[in-house]
Length: 252
Image (cartoon, rainbow, N blue to C red):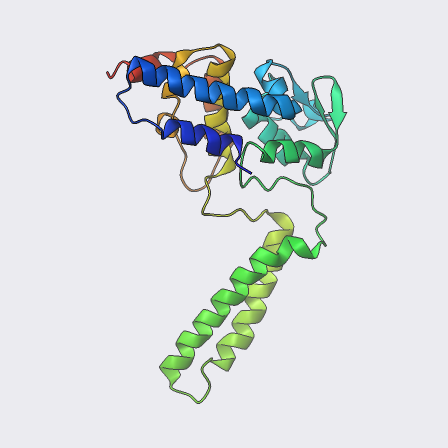
């Protein structure tokens, strides 16, 4: 199934700037339609477009940076899901409470590669990707060392045994604490910010939604940090990209 993100990106890629008036109207219509169709099936998107709320019971206690309390957005939902993932706390959308994983599934329909479902730390499925990377890297290094040593075996036994143990332990510990995301897909923080910019413009019926492309949104490469993304999210909520988007559509 195509996510809301991939559908909006497809609309972006349908025409290249500079845009004609007809192309602007076409892109805006496509994005508005994608949001409307998703909102009809997804309570989270419906609440975001309505300017509603997403919250949970201990929000004020967890909101050390004073960001989680605010209008419903994709990025704020991402942060709430991230904070409640380990505890598996229920989340309230509007006036209705949903299980954590139900909201994570709604979010996954829009933002790929989020990995915000609650999974017990002892669940075998949690460790598949990490162990595959660890063992694959071990086999590759053992093969390279085995070829260099010109032995009778294709793999270096010392590397295979000792590195295999160390990489397995590291993979298990890391995965117990972190989520494995597919590096082939955009980071969910970046995707959520992109969708929030589009959602804000769709909600206001602004033709500037045609200019709300991925390259317009500042991205933090490498390690992601709230000090970069929280001000950016607040800027979107305050319609802080309007002038820049208007200039972009005007070809300036």
